[in-house]
Image (cartoon, rainbow, N blue to C red):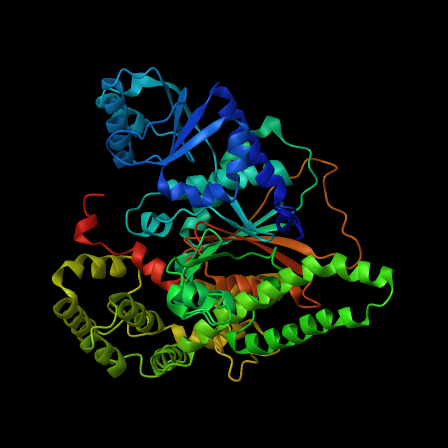
Length: 600
């Protein structure tokens, strides 16, 4: 089922299997038929761990979405609530249970908190008078979810906001716990490197947890050679920029959620000869995107300008393979052709899908609006006119373009200028509030607090120094046959990935001065390995580094790390982990405060 998780250097299926085993054990605790009531946010991540078939094997007969009022009728003995530990969800559960009791139900209730139990939530259930109705109150520790053969995410959407706006370190505790689970399965990671305040806190928690479990050390040969913890706020620029890889653009334009994308259906309609086109589907086309699909694995990390050529090359190969049938003369040859047919048909359908997606994206990337936006981004990144009001941004506000687009551009200008002059910042704020409404005052305040949109405090702007020292801008980036990570943004090399690359070779000592200009401490820790577990490296064997992004990572950054893993003489392979897969839009959205959401 999840074979693509075991293709990489590290077999992430082990993690998935451990999560499935725990789920089975919990379901078996509740004897008899069951209905699961889902916190809607959890259904996506759970789908990557267990399909409905696994739940069915354990007598799960019905599934409902958690909403207030009465539960839908179901002839089952057990009702299990799968929820995140959020107070507002406890009120809905209490409402469900009290409406049940009135109907003299003899069902058993259970609650499973994901990823941790919460005293506050249990207290709220007690206040609502329903805590006693639960037979089992348990936690299901789902910290790191395998998304692909080299990618893990906690899908903790509010991690960045909690750390930088609310000073809440819950997500960091979950991260440390997740890394301990990982070490229990894949061995202790001998070297830990980090940059940023949150990275320091996570490393401290891990070392403390290791001391607490000192007696129960596992005797597993370490799979990872090192761990790099990176704070998102060390590199605020990268997520704001428009990603230019195939996967990055799909996410920017349509949004990839838990490995699935929903696309406009018109491009995918199969028109049969002579049929009227009035019966076009109206439901969005939902596609799964991961490396289990051969073609997708091949093109997802390419710059979008190189995707067309790759697709037409693939089309020729597939056509040639189908033409082979005319050459099959003997029974043996025909039999061989027939045995390859399912694979060839799957490849043809995959090609048709990706050609349609590429056409949809091309309509957008070739538009004047996209080009103008990209030009301004690239001017900011290269330091052109970052210290005065930008006429393009003014025009966008005047045309009332989407607010998030404006916030991304203004934040980018601020980050590339180490803050904006008071006069410029006040002008932007005034224009935004007058055009989009004064309720966005809170959002602007949040962006300032997070360091994205801030007044210039010192006259010195460090960004040009950082850009030159770390070679963050590469003229003439080769998009077709890349020779540097800057191809993922057509010229801009993501700062976070440059730091990762330099750490591997020649090491961070060579950039001490620049590291001091970036927020938060940088550090290195060693974890003692039990004797006899020191890895003996074979000649030419690569080292494996787990790079953990605290606060989110973009698909373009993931593509850049995959590029570094494939470089011939790098000697390093990367596995990527994060609190959340993000793009500029979802990231800014998580920092917005809308009055209608104030109650939550």
